[in-house]
Image (cartoon, rainbow, N blue to C red):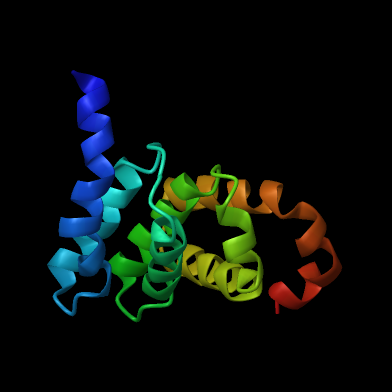
Length: 136
């Protein structure tokens, strides 16, 4: 029974949730991020779906709306363990890290620290050469 539900979950996300990651309605965008964060552990079978989601989440991360940026930061952390995700983040790593640091300077949220720690662990070799630049 649950296997059938898992198989249908990605289609549900594609057909009813993914478009809301770009929705101008703040509430729908937030709910889409939260939904993807909740179900980040499922296996994404549809080609291009995960890369589209990661790109949309990165766009939400740089939003001027702090709740959207926060939820995107938390969502990205949940997507990070998937093998396909780190290469999708690598080109924008400096922007992503700067946004995390900016959010942490504005908010006292434990989840941000956990998310930043996961990013630093995953991209340790890539961050080390430019770590001084990030703190400026």
